[in-house]
Length: 321
Image 1: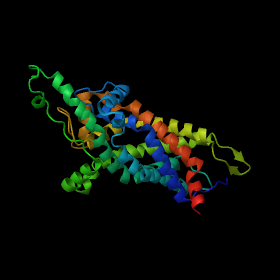
Image 2: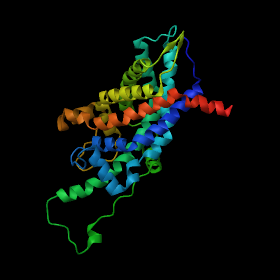
Image 3: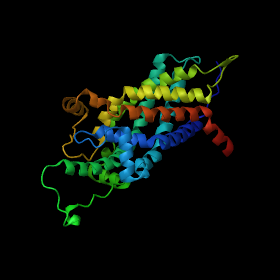
């Protein structure tokens, strides 16, 4: 089977462009997912749509993109590493143009492992920025629920405390490096690895087999699947893998969240986090944000695979030559 080989620089460009386009499209849903997963006691949001509506009302439209700058900055190397590493591993494990299922799973495992070096600090910073709005919204809810006399209207400026300044990615990074060193940015790396490796082991083999259904053989040449087929294959494989690893994503999000609301648990590690969530919130808590996560990952990887297989990187390199 003859197949057109794509250079590594082209793969990196394809992955980077795909990541930028995909994140821009789905970031508000990802913000809702983070806020819903972090809710423990006071329920500020009833669901994804309620979260987005309240975010727009209290923080404006661009509040839905809080933390997007970090994601857009680091998603290019993250997606480039993930897609390119999977492709390289698949080529290395192929024999005579054929890759067995175990090879597909192993290639996905390698891709998920490689991306953690970028994914962990990216998600660490993004989660703090995304969750800041939930913590701010939790204060008036807590005040309204608290028993006691109504606040005096005589001195409104004294009665209302000034809201804390909004964090920035730079301030969080500086503080973490100052207090915890480089390890601070890699808090939750084990949980990130525990989520991303199974995700890649499910996603890439499933996508490859779904995408192969749209490929045609002309003589001894295997053609690429059309754009729409690659897009749908990416959406389907992404949503299945996303829902499958949602419990691991909940654990990762909880571990990486530095600022907690009143009465919310802090955790000593993966096992402690799992035990506390199970005992205090029940098994359903491990599926918090599952719908949001599927709605994020499906178009994200659909766009990624569509761009990747359209060969944007090859076109860019051709124009530069």
